[in-house]
Figure: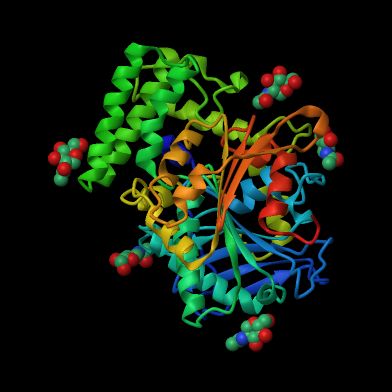
Length: 458
Ligand SMILES: *[C@@H]1O[C@H](CO)[C@@H](O)[C@H](O)[C@H]1NC(C)=O
Ligand SMILES: *[C@@H]1O[C@H](CO)[C@@H](O)[C@H](O)[C@H]1NC(C)=O
Ligand SMILES: *[C@@H]1O[C@H](CO)[C@@H](O)[C@H](O)[C@H]1NC(C)=O
Ligand SMILES: *[C@@H]1O[C@H](CO)[C@@H](O)[C@H](O)[C@H]1NC(C)=O
Ligand SMILES: *[C@@H]1O[C@H](CO)[C@@H](O)[C@H](O)[C@H]1NC(C)=O
């Protein structure tokens, strides 16, 4: 979940004016001649164009008994670019300096990044009225995309597909997963849904909102006085959700985040231990002011930009060398990391839970993994545990009663996490990671994805 303060960012970019030949509805696909990379546009509705980018793993081996998996990465926001952030800053083959990433998930699976929903990143709409207003509209578009990709990407039909999400992407994964499962059952889509993996995912906004105060009190980032006020603000969010007042709930939730920022010394809501990213000035900024929201955005970018040496910026490559390489991006399209219009169009859906969709998938026998970074606040681990406990799936009681297994990556360096599995539900607790698990703990993230997808490269 990236916070709303992006609205301030929307003041900067200029209105896009897209003029691509359109209307044929035929997919536009390009790529590297050997097929190791393919990318393209699918017009999922007239005037609504989704951009996708597929990488075939150099390690790929596949037998009917051990098929090579494909990971479809779903970025959050809503409005954040998976083709940008997920690909170049989290798990793709190259980093933002276009140097190889040694922890890339491409070692374990084929990867598909998508600028989802329409309007994000290189995706675009010819008219803003075409932006999606619900998670389910997103799911319908992404299902249309997959129906096209089964034809465009030769490996996809025989490769189990894993929907792997981060943050708001978890709500996309829940609805897309249910949509794909239904389409497969109806014989409308020839694909194997391998499973879902929900990383620090905004599946139950109420449970995350209620978790902030206890978490921050227990790690000394709020005192009791601020805690009382924050709890009251969280209760308001809960009541508004219960009343079906979702747009108001989003506003109240944002107010709560600003209050927490002001009273916690500007704690980094994506990683409460990352002091280097704390925004000390927000402690003195009145809540609700635009100054603190601008800072929050800067902070998010810096977090994902990390500490890579070299001079490239994501914005620079996406509007420069990458755009040139891909060739099919409309010249007058300016890539943005986060699209505010996409966020705003979804405003009435942002605070709606997607627990029922997870229950539906579990009941079909689809594998569902929840993974969460220990140091995240915005989509905290205790919030994720709270919504998992609300599942109606008949295995939940047994699941909750089982012990956890410790996870290691480099045996000399101690425990890196815990995992618990029962039937088709799995939960990974990732120690020392904030909101962006593959960035903070690349080693354990890689071994987790290998295990979830049962990669032949394990
Ligand atoms: C990957 O690179 C990082 C940073 O350069 C290094 O610390 C790590 O050991 C490397 N991992 C592997 C598996 O080579
Ligand atoms: C966008 O769509 C709306 C509703 O169909 C229409 O009224 C409007 O003229 C369109 N705008 C443009 C720029 O085409
Ligand atoms: C579905 O995909 C499988 C595996 O590639 C293939 O054998 C089968 O013929 C396909 N079925 C349809 C209806 O396309
Ligand atoms: C929605 O919330 C607002 C306050 O944010 C309140 O004034 C209004 O009565 C609520 N509406 C409903 C239907 O609960
Ligand atoms: C980057 O690394 C330097 C030196 O190791 C450190 O002082 C700085 O806080 C780091 N910045 C970020 C954004 O992590």
